[in-house]
Length: 145
Length: 145
DNA sequence: TTCATGTTTGTAATCATTACAGTTATAATA
DNA sequence: TATTATAACTGTAATGATTACAAACATGAA
Ligand SMILES: [Mn+2]
Ligand SMILES: [Mn+2]
Ligand SMILES: [Zn+2]
Ligand SMILES: [Zn+2]
Image (cartoon, rainbow over the protein chains, first blue to last red):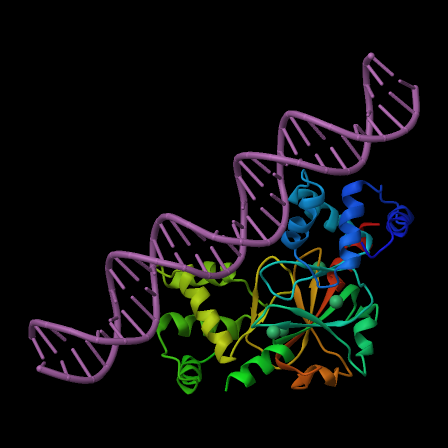
């Protein structure tokens, strides 16, 4: 439990979200595990602490958090949605071998991704994805040779 | 039938893909309908011409095309994969109201999206997505007021 | 207490995608 | 021509993420 529960509670209240125990636990988990987890990963961790925890609650909560802008939905894999509590604009890299999703920092971020309109369309969110083989998997396959 | 079947056939042969009738029809459809269609949209169109056409064939064919680099998988919606025969790097905009996916041209394209490596990870593909309300839907809701 | 409201839960339904096995088409070989 | 091998296609069943829904629960006001 790295993040202070008081802060977590305040974060929800500030957003006008009723701070139920389930919501607190989910938000705390997201703050402490910046690995872009799936619903299932969150569920399997939290069900230990809250045996009655329902997957539906996690889906509902994440949808609420997303709507309120305190969590980001990442659809990079095309299979399952992954969640990121870090809502500052940054890019993601998906490794096709190990499935891990990395944050990537562009030295010259594309400023156009941060604008409010494009071609007359009103922008609410922007995502940039890279796919390939990650550093670790590259090294592993190099060692095998 | 806008695109010439001869060209379509040549495109497959050049890629080392056996040009079956089903594959030709799918590739022709993609060339003539640059709307980022789903498997279902393609299926419902082609089943008129080929009554025995199977969804599985479309899934298999698109996976093959994607692997060979002649089609791009777009996972912007998180619900279903959409396909784009235009493999030149460009960004996409998803309208949350009407569901349409638009191409968007950035005047200053983010050159970093085109690099081969980032943070040591080897890049095979890159996608940039915007989500919001499209121009047409904005105008519609303006007229209602 | 009663009532209203919002939240959580468990199950069933939905829907995109994949797995699989049988059938068909094609071309090479005997 | 008949046989065989191989790749492609097809239809159905299975899978797995997500959503719909209704019952149970919690909370606080009247
Ligand atoms: Mn991230
Ligand atoms: Mn496009
Ligand atoms: Zn990896
Ligand atoms: Zn629209």
